[in-house]
Length: 290
Image (cartoon, rainbow, N blue to C red; front, side, top):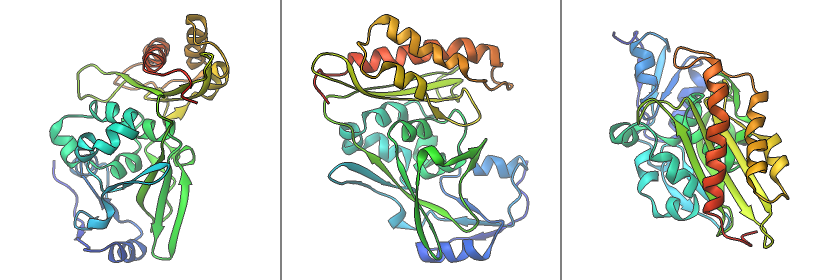
């Protein structure tokens, strides 16, 4: 297949890119191209204009602040995979990155592209949800911040208005000693996950769960937090009964039914994936981290 006809633009600055976006309502942004190019070639997307932001250097980078890691939207997934800052402060992301596609796709794919494409089974949106990430969104007139929990508007649809572009993501850092785990099931390594789960957990000195975040992807049209399971586990001893009860909360979700897997399969798979992620995160957790 060949892409439909479009006008190609290659701005060299953020200001230039935002001006183009404001003047071209049907434009699509080309970041890593791992999702957009196949959509163009298969005639799923028909933009009049494509704005290539690969030359804008200040849209990429990883920076540590006193309590967060700030990542530019154009940061390649491979850069995240190799970063000591990510390995030290965002181990959940480091584990998830290794399960995204293959070296070639991670070498081109960007964190911003993954978040904006919002594939239901993509790993990075799950990580961003677990970390309560904040997204910086800009247009020609200014900027605003959006919580990752409010960013998904529907299947493959982010909450971006006309003329807006994601420029950076801030990930709050959890305390030293917290446990994390990212577990997914796919038919082959590198395939999109049928169900994926990311967990962050902190234990109190008496061994009860002081703080926990559970995010899940692949089960519904958008990734989401298992808030019922989080409430159920907070303040409890993390015994087998508690983990099984928490995992069973996935049965309240109406799962996706698509050519990759029927809803009945996702419904049976989800509790096992969540339980495994919880158990692994707890094994990696130190007492008194909170």
